[in-house]
Structures are given as C-alpha cells and as structure tokens.
Image (cartoon, rainbow, N blue to C red; front, side, top):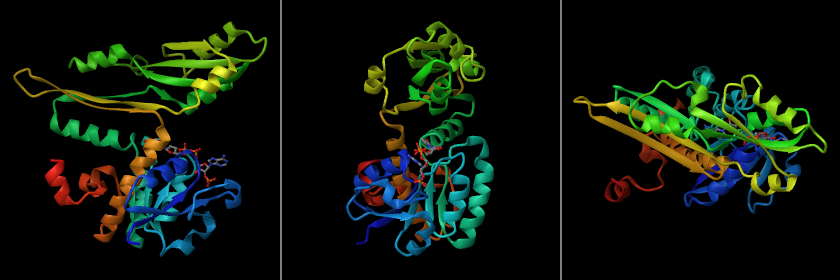
Length: 327
Ligand code: NDP
C-alpha cells in the first residue's frame, strides 16, 4: 500500500495511545511495536502488528517510514531519539523544557549526518502550547504570556502523596486558579507567583487506623510539592478511588494579554480540556509523523521543532482542499 508506515518505540501510556490514534487515520499503517521487554510479555492483541525487541529495529529500516518514540523524557528519550534518528525519521514528545536546547543539538547532529528528519518535543506542552505562545508573542509584542495547567493528574505529585506515612493510595490534581485566570483574561497582565497560578487537590485512601490529621498536615507542609500552594486534602475510600480517579485528564490555557496602542486590549487564548493526556499527546505525535515523512521526502533533514513545521504538513488533506474548505 502507499500508506505511511509507522513504528512505535515503547509500549507505555503514550505507546498505547498511539495505537488508537493510528487507527483513526486513513493514510497510515502501524507495522510494529518495539520494546526493551520480552515482546511476548506485552500480550499485545493487534492484528497484523508485530511486537519486536528494540535491538532488532535496524532490520526494519526499509519497512518503516516514521518511528513514534513513546519512551519517557527523563531516561529514555535522551538515548532513544539520537539512536533511532540515525536510522529512521522520528517524532518524540521530549518534555524536559530546560534540556530541550542540548537535546536538539544531539538529535540534529545525528539526523543531519544520516539524512533523517526528527521532529522533537511534540505534544501539547511542549507542542501545541508552544506554537500558541510564539504566535501570541509575535502578534502582540507589547504584552505578557501566561500558561496555566489543569485540571490535570500530576504523576510526580501523586507519587509524593503516596510516599506519606499512613497513605495507602492517592492521586493529586493540579487545578488552575480561577481568580488568577480571570485577572489575566481582564488584560491586567498581573504579576503572579507560581503558587498563585495553581492550586492542588489530593484524594487520599488512608491505611486502616492511620492518623488523618497527621497525613493532611504532612502533605500540606511538604516543601516544593505543596507547602507554597493552596492545597486541599480529601479522604476517600479505595472503591471511590478506583471508580473516579483512574483516568489521566489534563489540559490548560495559554493566554496573552497585549496592547496594540490607543489603549486597546487584545486577549489571545488557547485552551485544551483532555479526558486522556496520553491519548491526546499520541494523537499529536501521529499528525506530526505525516510532517516528518513529507519533510524527509523534501530532503529537509535534521532535527525540527513544531516551530519549523507549517500546519499544512500535519494535515491529511491536500493543500487545495485546505485552501478551499479551511481558510
Ligand atoms: P510510561 O511510563 O507509561 O512509558 C515509558 C516507557 O516505560 C515505555 O515506553 C515502556 O518502554 C516502559 N514501560 C511502560 N510500562 C511499563 C511496564 N508496565 N513495565 C516496564 N516498562 C514499562 O510513560 P508515558 O507513556 O505516560 O509518557 C511518556 C513520556 O511522554 C513522558 O515521559 C512525558 O515526557 C511525555 N509526555 C509529553 C507530553 C507533551 O505534551 N509533550 C504530554 C504527556 C507526556 P518499553 O516498552 O521499552 O519497556
């Protein structure tokens, strides 16, 4: 077939979301999933898709057009993206913002040398939020950018509450502070401290006989994670946790208030409300896989970011159709 042939590297939340996202396209086909684990152990049940050990990826060099790299940002991608970009076009979701410049350098070097195209740090933040921050900043130079996250399940903060003495299980949601958002939307361009922008809400299952007041106090005073925030601690049953708190919702807002002279305020706002963070992020990766494929065909080699990719490149529709129906 003349479909774009896709491989997935890493079978975690994002990798699973990518399988779903590819199913929703008409111009792509999933060829194989690569893992560091024994491929048999994944118990994958997707017809016509192979599960392959990561060490055999090189055998697929001529069978796969783009690899979606679905490993973790902390440990996996700093190694996996340069390695795979030496053989394949790639798309990844590297999200350690402070390390993106050095990550870009290392990927760009490999991709340029091997005539591959590697689109890095794709997703929603970084990703779609980044695109909107840049547009707002370019269009309204006299203004201020704000990013709010949530309501969202935070893995790091959930891990932190689960480590507290007497906690059996628990989750933490980051919530954007409504009053701060309203101030920003009013065009006041307020100065906001980190803790003023977000609140934290925890749902905790306590161990039998545990001191709930002590748990609440330990969470609320935890340095870095909670101490500086408005934190709400709720105790719930294990059943409630399993019923209401197993999804991974997320989202947020990019807002810029700017002034175009004569005192006219302009508010630029982009927002996402997501039931499933990994499924949405994977859907963004899949759309950008189209761009990686096309850019590579045009010999645009090296590392790219969302800033380098024109929107038409991620669309399955022709340029003509886009001009006719979407402009
Ligand atoms: P996971 O922890 O679910 O998966 C990461 C890797 O861990 C997988 O690729 C897999 O590799 C391995 N793994 C997963 N499950 C298991 C298991 N049960 N046992 C052993 N190994 C396992 O991470 P996510 O998929 O949730 O997220 C991946 C990255 O996506 C995050 O680190 C984050 O940086 C990024 N992200 C970016 C966003 C953005 O907007 N830019 C938004 C959301 C996430 P293998 O199969 O090789 O074992």
